Length: 351
Image (spheres, rainbow, N blue to C red):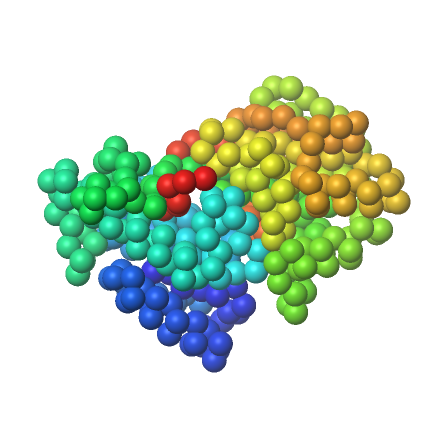
C-alpha cells in the first residue's frame, strides 16, 4: 500500500494525514485486506517503492491523488502486479475515468473484492496465495471473470489499460537555459499549451480542491494566455495553425471531472487527440465553457481524432502537464506514443 496524500509536501506527518492513516487502516482491516502501508516523502520515492513492492506482491494500491497514482503506476508498468486505486486527492480524474468509487469506504471495498477475486483465481489455477505474504503471483486469464467460489459474481474486475510515453524533443531547462531531453509516462492525459498553463496555476491554489481548483487555474489563464502556432502530426497526418491547446487523452477526464475527451477509453490502444484552435481572447470564454460543461466535440474550433502516435511543435515555449503534474515550463516540441495493455488495474466489473 503506497500512501501519499496530495497535500503532503514532505516526510513530516501532518495531523490530518495521521487521521487519514488511521481511517485507512480501519477500513482495510474491516474489509479483510492484509496490508503494509508505506509512506513516501516524494512522488519519485513513491515510484521506487512501487517498483520494489511489485516484485513481492501481486497487488500494490496507491492512496492519493492523480500525481501519486501516476508515480505508483510508473513502478508497475509492464509487470503483472495489479494496481489498486484509493482516490484521496484533489482531482481524482484517473479514478473517475476508470469508474472507481471516489468515496474511500467504497474504494476500499472494491479493492477488497479485487483481492478476493485474485486470490480465488490463483488458487483455482493451482497457485499458492497466502494472506501473510503476497508472493509468487502469476497472471491468469481468469482475472477478468467473476469470483464464483462464493456463489456470486465479484464486483471487481482486473483489466489491462494503456499508458502513454511522453518524450520532449526540444525543451529549454529553466535553470541552465540549455536544451534537454526528458521522458515520462502518463496514464490519463497530457496537456500542452493553455492546458499546461492551467495546471501550473491550479497547482499553486492550495486552498481549492477538485474542479474548483481547475476552474481557478482557468480563470487565471483565460485572458492573458497567448495562443501559439503549432504543427501537429498524428499517425502521419499533419495539422497546422494557431492553437490554444493540444490534449493527448488516454482517459476521458481532467481538471477534477472536466470531460475533455468524453469518448476516450484507457484500454482501446488509442489516444484521443483534442486540438482546440485559437478563437481570440473573448471568444475563448463560450468555447471553453462548452468544453468544461459538455466536453470537447468536433466543430469549426475543435478537432478530434484518434491515433497511436503524435508529435507537436510550437513556435514558442509553452507549458505541459502529465496527469495534472507540470512536467515542463519551456517546451517547444514533444512526441507521445501509446503503449497498449501496460498496466493491470483493479476496477469495477459493471459500467
